[in-house]
Length: 76
Image (cartoon, rainbow, N blue to C red):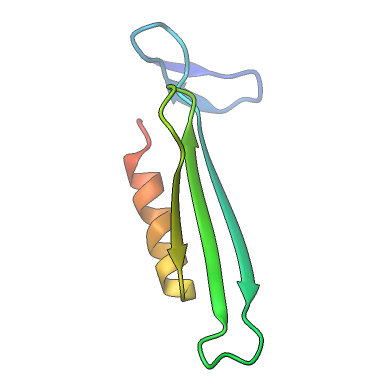
């Protein structure tokens, strides 16, 4: 069953009647004097007690693909 949160967004309740939450943090930097300078660290976390997952990407396309995977795994 969907529910509107205090900020006005809509989400699906889990079996405990609470809205699942997830966090995605992306840190991007450039390696100095390196031909493939783009670097990023992507940290995924959730409120269900699982440990966070850290992945790394070497291109903007890899970052976008990681974001799309993360969004695709969110509950409706």
